[in-house]
Amino acid sequence: MQWSVIPQKGEVPAPRDDHSMVQVGPGQFLIFGGFVNGSRRNDVYQLNFDGSSANWTLLAGNSSGHSTPPARASHCAGFHANTMYVIGGEDEDHNKLNDFWAFSLDSKTWQQLDCHGQEDFFRSGASASVANGRIYIFGGILEITKELNDMYVFDCASKSIQKYDDAVQQQQ
Image 1 (cartoon, rainbow, N blue to C red):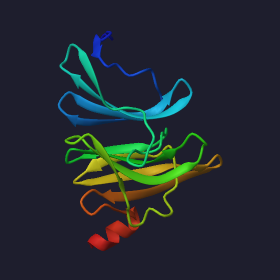
Image 2: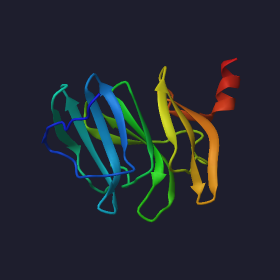
Image 3: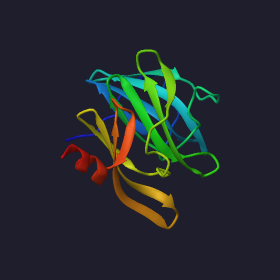
Image 4: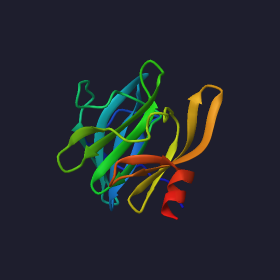
């Protein structure tokens, strides 16, 4: 096995960390947010990879306003039914976030979700995985000395979030 540099073209994002990346189709990915030059971002880029080159497109720029999520890092994300869901993270003032946002790949627009059960969901640094129309979210950090080991389930259809134990009990 040998590593190689992949040629990139288009609107290549600036170097960043603490962002999210979701697969939206074969060879297609979205990245959102993270740190760029010490500041948090809320931009969305699409990567189309054909096996030999990477073509980037800026879908939503770094902006502020009512219809876009605050810039953030250390959030988690999942993709289902042509929508990227962005969950939690940390804002520019190091506040933990408990908000949920949906980015439509079709319309290239954001929508803030009002999810039942999100009131106590403040966290950053969580991990997420998508299965069967649900996003499973594990752990993260609440405070510098308060790491979490709980699991939550976000249902993409009902736009609700539940602690994993509660979600399992409802299915039985």
